Length: 129
Image (cartoon, rainbow, N blue to C red):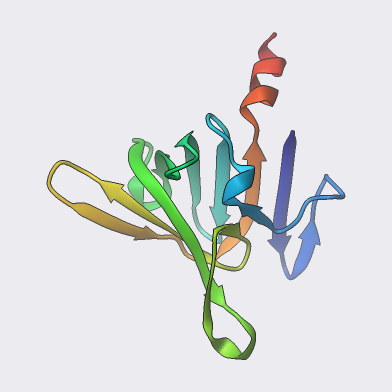
């Protein structure tokens, strides 16, 4: 299934009528890809291990080279302005990732998410065959 959701100028645009503005962790399978658009950047996250939320992240401040990353959560303001987390990705929130390297762990937080696209691995394979 290929679905896209985005918010532009305050309105919701979606070619799939049943699409929500969130992608919970349990909806992202191995080899699925998620495009995360912010106001000025686009990030690409390819899920390797859904249990640990491990994948490869590129785009935005990271550039085109993919880095091993762990999707932690989305952080946004709830009612009353309190900080709330969401176990997955959510439009209007900021995605939080940890990148691991041999010597350190780096935290990457996107700016507010303006659009999300989930591309299922099964759909990509069916387009090829």
